[in-house]
Image (cartoon, rainbow, N blue to C red; front, side, top):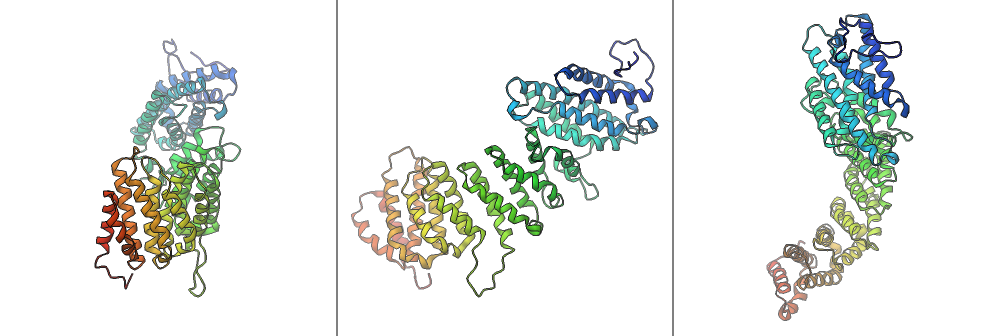
Length: 508
């Protein structure tokens, strides 16, 4: 069969044509396939399907072994063309824009991805064969152009997404395994950063391929782009990540600044990975750490508990970096820190909050803030006292996560700010005794293990309160222990009294 003037197609199965193709015809065939794959519009659908069949037949043809020989001048641009074909295949199998990606379109994407996965397997096997051959020195150049687009395809379709199917995920996994085998990499992390110091890695090239789709006008055109970026970013860690900071920070900020909750959380996770894996000196340079802080701080005004949880975890790891730039001379009072600013906002939100999920989220992070500030938590003592008392009064569901975390916060607060606790003795003692009585009489579905944990934590708080108040708690509880009829409450009081016996309060 001769390729016609409009389309150079390889011999189909059963063709009567014999004899090898000229090398120039091989290049023309790939050029025509690339032209049809890049075509847009519904009228080109048949042409693209035919181009896939042509490519499959072309890769199976014996003449395709010439691809990586590198001796024929007409094939010198073949590695670059193969890279363009791989990019076109990836775009062909890419999911549609999010508002349009509904129903049947997702199933069509999965079918396309399965077909493209089979083609990539054939193409990588050709590279592997050329690698094992002594007459194909151009395989390295070809692999360099193919690795990036194939990797992006793999990450797009290897995990469970609306546009994937079990078949497309399986084929993407096979393509990844073969890609790592051909590149002689033991893991995806090694593939991205390089298996040794002399090897450059492919992270830069992949970020270059993703860059056109990661600006503010285009990043939502392909819903897979953000997942590929995030998944790839989190595979590169310290010390390799810092050299790519200029490439990864803007997209992470862009994704985190979106109005959709899913994108906010994804972007914050990317920023958190950067904070953990880039040296503080690099983040402080050009005020990057401040940019990160303000981007994260603005999210604390949201009502979405998942976002707040991700932001607070990231901020807690960012505070040590920000505080490296602060210099206290020891003469005046210590300046307020970013941690003070965030805690002040959290406490302001916690006081009137009635949404249980948000209450749990705030309470979950409170111990880390008190521990971080240490004695400086005394700046927030009045508001912390109101929050602690208010949260101890409210039942939090069977797991009682909020009240357990508030008790942990109270313990830390008394340990760090003990000189200022004795004047709050009566208020805190009433709140803790009320909690113990409520838990002891609780007949709800709260598991016994949770009730025991609450009673134990509350008792520990009473013991600490007694030490902070020079033994006043023991004296106040003496009459209660004699008249108390509830065994659980009595046990807690007796434990406080036993712990106070023989304790010296001279060096509290």
